[in-house]
Image (cartoon, rainbow, N blue to C red):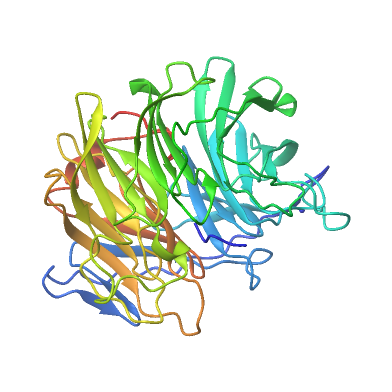
Length: 446
């Protein structure tokens, strides 16, 4: 999340591949984690590649953010723009192109020939080179990625309070995009109060330049309880189940999205004792559970320590019973982190194991955790990968960790793209599942 206070006619595109760093160490037994330099991992996980950030996306403020996948390509967001990787050989990723398009967040999704970025920072305009002029624009930027070597900017949509994250809901010839954003900011031109809403953008697939806001539903039957922000942080849609789960800072909300332009509230959850920031949501494959995460401290604090209760900065597992969510248990990584390591539950995805509920998840400097919540009341970790503390005080670690076609891909804020392989009897069936594309906030059954 990082709760924090160029794309025009032609974004700057570069494409100089950088050879990956590979590691081929033999995994140690799970009871004795393997350690190489400042990297430690459980015996069932192996780091197979590491791609550092490279120019023009390796400046001090150019931190890596979210991930999306399509075919043999991975797309990595960055505060400076985004990178397209060829991952046809996961142990040898290659940079196809890098687009310089600076803005906070730049969370990324892909659908067919389109790539969408979330812009959560007032800019001088919608174009990538909009450095000058009053900062009065934020929202979504849209690119055509037909040519992976040369993505082209095609348009943008200004949204209230920008876009911190966004969620795609395909529907025929239109792509609906749910925009989540924090607010309000009373003195801001782009984020006036009140802000008890989400925004829905329609992107015509044949004319993406004509994208526009088509609805602003108020999905809060009762006012939220967060002192930090209103609106939503993250929405996960499961179109096949006609459901969505929204993490909305002070609340969790279960939605009926049978009509994608008019989502209906089924249930609103509040937990002021254990949750500070309802950050994200993940359904299990059957759509019978939802994992909500709490990003205590907004991503910048050390909350994985003995001084923080195990129910804070953690994941809450809810079972969907009779159409209502009921909390069953909590999960937090069992390894204590140092006081200078920002660590809290962050972005993750299911590992597609039939008849099991297993997830991989990023924890900033807590690294990458693989955990099993098949038993909702007693979730447990089954594997992990992490680096030691960043050498300088900084927000660092894994922003997003997702499983895609046999491998775990971790977008590390400072270190770049890590590729991990897990070999474990519990997760091995996932290797038979092949996905054509993957956007974590738009779930599909496997």
